[in-house]
Image (cartoon, rainbow, N blue to C red):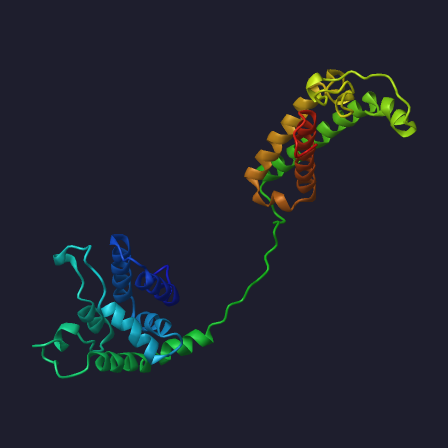
Length: 288
């Protein structure tokens, strides 16, 4: 039994024949494919040649047989080279000619080598009827499988519960901190709306525009340590990250769960905002 079907073997053989140049690795691959071909049942062998013929074209199969019979093997030791004509003749039961017999001094020097290959290809295709019938009888059905199984293992359910609980705990601590902190831009909102010069806020000198005495509005509150999340809240989110990673390792379909997708999207958006904010504070041209 082979993991490759007749169509796969035919495609790989065609790829090797089309390779330029046909180096040592290509020659080894072609040798293994031919050995695989002759080791399979007759129906498989004729199926490979039928697939090489592009749905029953004698001319196309003749061209491929000409290339196979003249297979390049210069990177293989002489004593290890395959006699492709003898190999395929024994496997298929169809006489395949050797080019040397049609050269000067050969037993068929007066005959056409291409004509003999064409006759062999035609005979092979005449014997491919069982494979063609089987090919068109078999049908492929694509059944939609549920992405989430209803009966999860206890360890998986435990990992999912722990991840969801860790997210809830972290979000609760984050919401409590946000309520205690208050609006970030409350001092400057009325000033910006009225256009009246307001008090000079605290700022990071690195966030101000070079050569200007006006500080950057983005650094008015964002650079202050008083408005950073406490270590306990950050620790809860780090725990949530690790629990989600464990849940994803235990159950690969976590990506399809709404709570996981929402948490993933929030973190992605937060990283984007932080990246843009830091670039603006550092006065990066593309962001400013």
